[in-house]
Length: 251
Image (cartoon, rainbow, N blue to C red):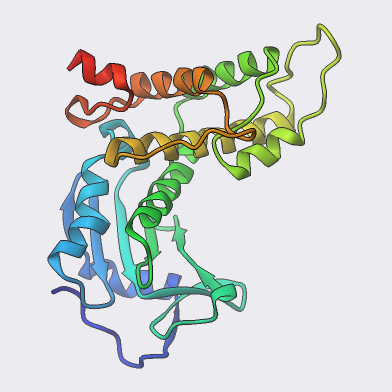
């Protein structure tokens, strides 16, 4: 079991204050990660919430993001405009599933009570993908942007997740023969979100067997494969873990 509960079951603590008070109490996990659980947790749960997803991270992701502190909390809530940790279950419409602060280092907060492990992994990798996007190597950013530009030139429909899909729909239409303006603000916003969503899928796929549901909003598999292959080269998985079927064949 791990993690003493702070006094006051219904106490609501802003995450910046909690991060400061827990800075010296973090337990190392390796790979630049440390954690603190604000509620009792069995070792098998810590494996599912921490050890398994962290072990699946590409080394280049860990190096780019830098040291990360993780706080596992029962629930997260937004109070007075700021995320806070609370121990009593809040109303569903007030809940947050994750939050992070970057002042003085990366401290990530995750709500774990009533959380499906698969959905938790999705939130975990999505949070790390957001952090990675802020520190992405310019060469990697250029390569991914070129992939998106090629998709636009070929009028490829769909995206990996809803946030990037909505931004893609908001891109201005090009006249016939016009090249994609990759420097425009709408395209740069779309590219950042597309990278975040695709990187989330990629890291989740390294960790777990997941299915990508085909549909009118899903980027076609041929083009999604190009993205995953590029990320596989830019961020090689640990121990050459397979992501696509052909990676299994190479092994």
